[in-house]
Amino acid sequence: MNASNLTGIAYRKHMENLDKLGCYIFFIKKNGERYKKATWIDFVGSEKCAADVISRLEKLNPGQKFEAA
Image (cartoon, one colour):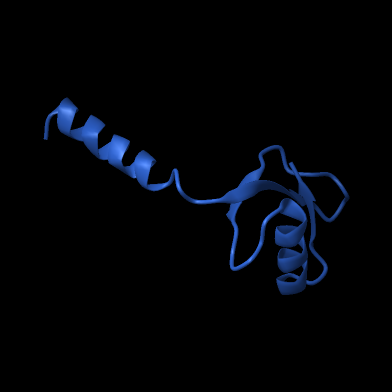
């Protein structure tokens, strides 16, 4: 493989992800601080905003807290 092939592969992978919808969410640590980097979470079903994603995550992860970025 040469450099142009690798560039093409990276470009195609990037273009595949452009149509995905989602939002960035901060996970909250047990001591109340949030992690430094936000995590990209894809929308599932009829979710349209970060609040919908947070409610789904809190339902699936009892005791864990989340915050919209």
